[in-house]
Length: 410
Length: 103
Image 1 (tube, rainbow over the protein chains, first blue to last red):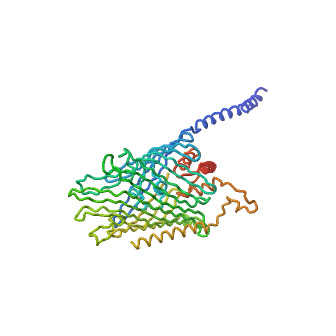
Image 2: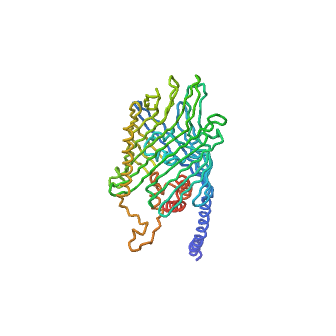
Image 3: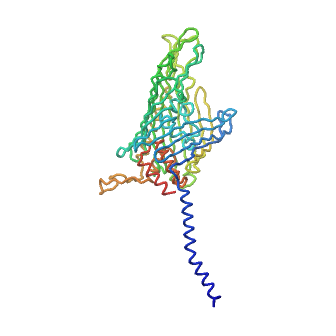
């Protein structure tokens, strides 16, 4: 009799143990999930890389992958630290560069305070479009990359934000920074003076600070059009306690962006970008070893316009991932002539060498150049693309270039 | 010099023409104002996070795949993009919510 009841008893015990075991399991799972719950501190590494093959004027080479990690560290809802490094092969070794490192504090819906080293909001390319997976060409437009016309990064403090105005929007930035540096070589040198606008003024060379900003206006409620105006003024860019201390610099830029996706009439997307940078530095004199004076007047500008079309609505899967890009860019630099028999120079865009009061000959500055670039991109994913580009750079001679790059954002 | 000015003039024409094409030929209906709602007149619809995601991200780069990052990561990326690209607080919040709900 007992032998018949035993299996039944075991079965009842198992049934009653089930919920108990399940409850224990649920509590363990809950504890596990609780341990995975994010805290108020979030750390994220993003960035980009690119590598490929280039042939410029017949000299071909594989180019190594640049690695640009971006570190984001968020504390709560208001504090964000961002920093970007750029690591790439240069010469015989590897070059490390800190592109920017800054802290933002979100004050309210319309106002963000930022301090540290940040990309200059001068035009749009430098701040928003330069990463390899965003830039639709393998390289930057002339005058917008690492040898720019205009400032690229600042050591300073900034207020910025985005504000809705009915159906329109604006975004703005206003900053104070150490500003650019005028580097003047020793007066017994025949080297021309140079002006550093790349933001490496981390130990300010004088007490005059740069004031600058950018305002972007989006007049349509679909955010397809943005028009931006940027400016930066520094009342003195020369070294402290030198006669160049009060040489002023005025930089300004205009930028335009038109982006419209899914246009059925053309079965795809259009992306148009344009920017024009201007740099104007006060005239100043340098005294040469033979007692003559040279007038230096630096007025540089750089510009580009780029249009891209992607037939994203094409029924052909391969075609829908292609993007066709065309770009024209140029750079107009003043050229400081080495001192020779002519001691009086006036340099402005295309420089004019005064041979005599009645005879003026226009001289095209050596650094001036223009570039046509055409490209086809194949988008493997939303953040990785194969870029094929053919470019022709015109200076005194024509230099062709062919590029194949693979760009990856992460 | 003349050649350079002609090229710049052509570029300006291209910019103007492209802008016209982008806005003139658009056929996608964006029901965001009373004009699209017929008799409903002055009633205005708010844009969804999905619409804002497409419009704002594409200003600089391809709109990201929501599955590319976790909810927490989207929070940080949203804050970063708000600072970097000057997004409004409201747009940022809606876009991040959409990405978190779609990943």
